[in-house]
Image 1: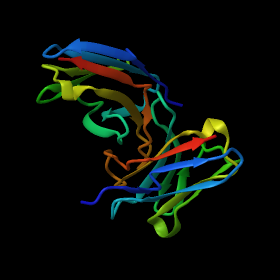
Image 2: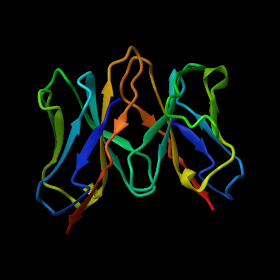
Image 3: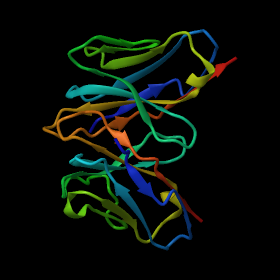
Image 4: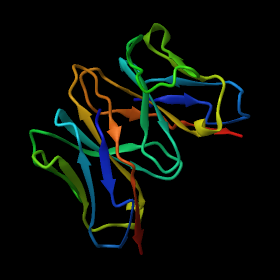
Length: 113
Length: 114
């Protein structure tokens, strides 16, 4: 099966600029997750979608981060305005609703300067 | 919420030796414990997982043990090879309907010396 697709692979922006990341999950995977992985740390959940509805966004900094999953397939994560501490790899993952195993995408490495 | 602690943060072993990485979790409702391997610049990949109704699971050179009472679980890699060098993350997930959010540990950089 095709994997989880993410783009862009890399992004460098200046602080206070905006940026968007895109994720296309594996076909048929109803659950989609966005994780933030800061260098040297484990991934931290930002938001979880079930189809096109938000299940949990309690750790999403909503003053600057937003995410949507139109039609329950692709998802975008946006940061506006970006801060230096947002520099990280943003990982998208998807899974079947009733299964535990995730498939992660390759991630988008964001550098805020 | 769940808190997962992982140690050691770095581990160096000689090729052929065994490596053990340990994790503890805080939420007694957690019942799924996967381990991920992440090579530099690549995505995390699931290498083994265990559920709370099982005490041990083995897959070739890797095994995971779980002690629910003590809330800790461990990854064991035997006969290590240079290609085992990577960062390993443990994670825990509480059962919550169909939600399977993972809380990750901080990672262990394993280096296998030839």
